[in-house]
Image (cartoon, rainbow, N blue to C red; front, top):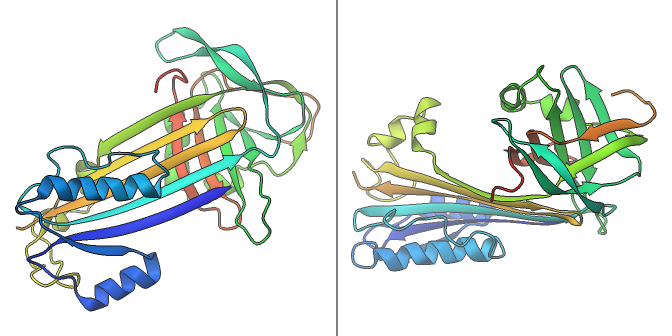
Length: 296
């Protein structure tokens, strides 16, 4: 698997980042820092940030900052990007299978199939599938995709989401450890992009001062009274019979002022949750859900 992480800070040329902040950003996060002219060349600065993200994500995300997100009042932009590409340890066959999307409609989608044993476990209300990624390099981190499939009419997708984000050990404790023979097996191929502005969600989580005249004096000269104007997040993922390509980017703009068995089925023909996880640390790189594999 290939992974890369990049961070950057773009500050208006009328301000200056403090050496302590620059040193920490470089040593801990390998972040780059640039001086730009937001006052007279805001659009050029926006394009520089987007170019940085595009390069860090191997062109999977071309625009994290939308038009109008940066203007002459912008003081600083912070951005980070994560890129992941992994191939399955064993590629899958492909066939067309039905998938039941919310609202009662059924669509036919290209799907991954196999008769080989898989890492599957059955839990009350849902079942889990672990799909390891190939790792050809020793000393390199190992990754896997975890798919959690709710049973019909028992556990909802929202229930699984809540457990995954509120219980730190949930992903780890519900990751299958051993292979079992499969009966029916189907996981749809999917590809989609998600983007949103996260300010309101952060406020709901209690992060309020930073949006209402916070104190960023530890970051830059003149940092008192700056406030976050926007938090832009964009993610893309593609899963097929060969493997996964995924990327995510976030930019912040601040303005001045189952047990063993035989033939265990895993048929993901309805909405499911997925996560890309690092094996050694249990760190979740990506978390999302598929409601319609045909919707990009």
